[in-house]
Length: 128
Image (cartoon, rainbow, N blue to C red; front, side):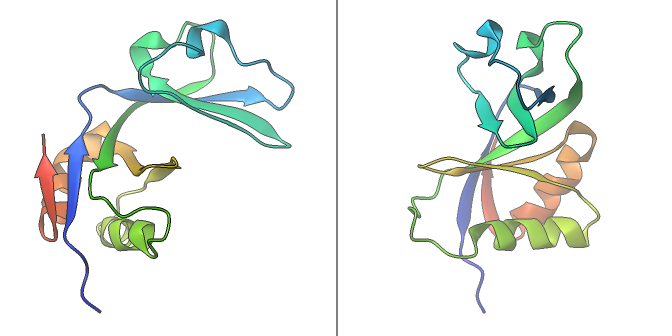
């Protein structure tokens, strides 16, 4: 199988992944941010956003960076996350994926950014 040529942009800001209880309200500080992903399930509320927007006292994992998929693949695409995550996993790099209607964001810890760029550059165009 040939891996498609993806175009990825590295977002400039460091992101935080916040965890709240399932009954928590969406905080006001998370409602008007340029990049923010809010997910509620039966068991939790998660918010991903620039870490400089997160106030003290919030349970957060800091220092994540995001690759934004800029290729126009649409909702019909199959295997995109697998194509991006497998080489990273093989290199020992964990990911946190955020999908939207229009695209995907693959988050990796900032300490692994250089290594991830090297791995993904083998089959992706990386824009920094």
